[in-house]
Image 1 (tube, rainbow, N blue to C red):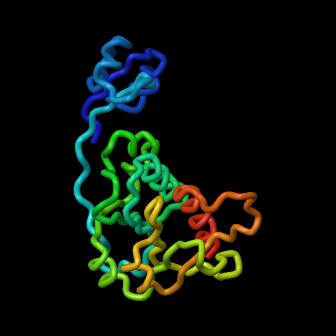
Image 2: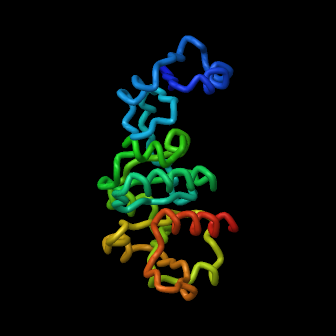
Length: 207
């Protein structure tokens, strides 16, 4: 997958040469790194990789532990959720067609490599509903307190748009609507969607 690696910080050279063929590694100047990197402050390493093959949903989606991201537009949130899915070993992350691009450089940066490990594929809402039947759970502040419930063994947890939440087309067809209790809040109206994803994933892993 890795085709070339450019480094402007020589401290990385020995570590990279232990993991990759030295033919793939090119040492460049910090100025050159700033010219080719999309980051304001490049970390000193830039890799050129082949696009991975397209991933398709499994035949039995209901047997998975997976997130469905409904119109997550912020690249930082998407990348962080992929990192969370990687950490908790979720089987898939499914994206609605209007999510941020998984290969956006901000998504890749926020995922810290998890975007290349987690199985990610795009599914429209209708296909999602047809494949997973009654094994979906939507996240909303008006749902049932997850800490008073037994986590399901498998299924799809739907995380909604940063400002609009889960779309009505999905909410009306899920098995349960789940909520992270907010009785301790000192004024915050909601949680960031990536923070909520981490709490749901940790709770789910108790099953």
